[in-house]
Length: 292
Image (tube, rainbow, N blue to C red; front, top):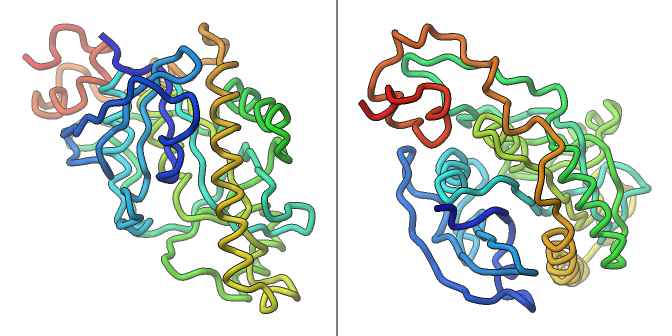
């Protein structure tokens, strides 16, 4: 039986939001290791949700250290069908101002140290990723921003960098010349793995400041950035609540069929250990062979 239908990945303040009830914690162990923290399970707007603090409570895990596979596999094991992701980003365009929420529909990968697939070890799959976010969930998040009186902007490109250092000015200006909208360090791997796990995924990229390209960048104080972070966290709670309330019960997208034509390997040649490890994701395509 599913323990949650909607997953939320974000900062630690979200599971204290008003209206979050019947709260419990669950420490999951996945075939890919432990997720960032215990999952916070509860009810929000009448829907069963699972919250995960991406960097762990207390922000203990760097972007490059995140076990993305365990985080998304954990969501799959809980029965989650849709993920709402929230993360802090820097703006690469004048029009994306601090406290704006950008809901990207594209990603560019500038990372180099991360595992971004569940597959391998004798099983090959190539999922379609031309449109990397779920259009249905993105629309719901956009509408939720407007209902929460948050400036939400539908569409744009999120460039995912390795970090943990921020961009040099040369890099920041290069990204701007490519037409990128925001820069962050986490969401691309989540989106790739959610697609492989056949989970709908979209993200609200919460602008904290302009990246270092901006001529007034050096005049921004730490106090100003902290104030924006607090405001974004407050806004995120309202956006999530409205998004959960408005999420359709039925799917109009194809995210839950992402693997239907993606598995390339001859079924009879896939190692039993690989089948067992990926049972929550591929079980429906392998029938009784999984776990045999």
